[in-house]
Length: 309
Image 1 (cartoon, one colour):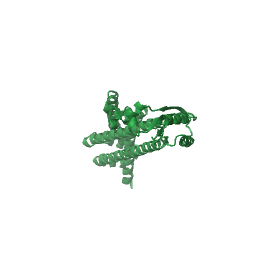
Image 2: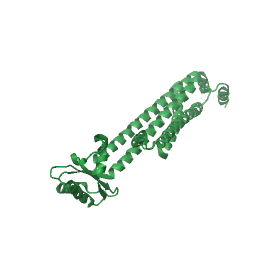
Image 3: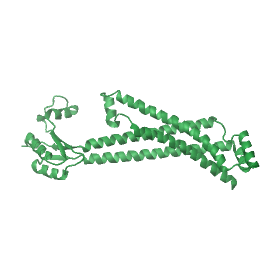
């Protein structure tokens, strides 16, 4: 009891963890920056994943039949025959021929306005809309099209869908890797800060430990201090990341029907990370705060065990 009372008196006279100083404020700033970058990484991964899912859904809902012009081919009759073949399969919701005007508009960016497609060997297209719940037998459709219209080519966009899935998975994997690296850097920062704090008050810690203060008591003081510091830094970084996402979402919504807005929307949607994204930001903030406290706790316990041995 006397040793415990002496430990408490020593702790009151000399705080175990030194108050905030330049090093402590620098650590909070580093944690805020790491949290900000981690949240941005998580938000970017969420945006790419959601956009890739939308692209995949849109591509998977359509197939394209391309008919190449060949000598002696009646293009209009070939289009009608190919459309009839495609529409006859279960799982096909509709099959529509891209008319001459629409085909000319598709080529206008490259060949200029006023194009007469009859003067050029331009392929014609048929857009086949697919039922997501029941995909047609593309192998049988492709074989029947080859017999009815030999110059017809069926593209079910399977290659593009596979590439989008691979891209989304690769992006998520890279994002998780970057997130792990940032969390590791945060943990190393806390380790150095904890060791610095212990070095600055090492004599107090050793006296408390040798007069009877338990290692858990000393570690609890460090854990409380670094939990508060980590929470401040993580909260600041998380709020900054949310502000960035809100600004980008506002910019996207106010630049609809503009060239830059359309390009950004095509690539990243409306820059909204949604509820899951904001929940992920909150989870990153909590994770970094807990990681800060746990890292300081382990560092102190390891230090005290080294003193005992």
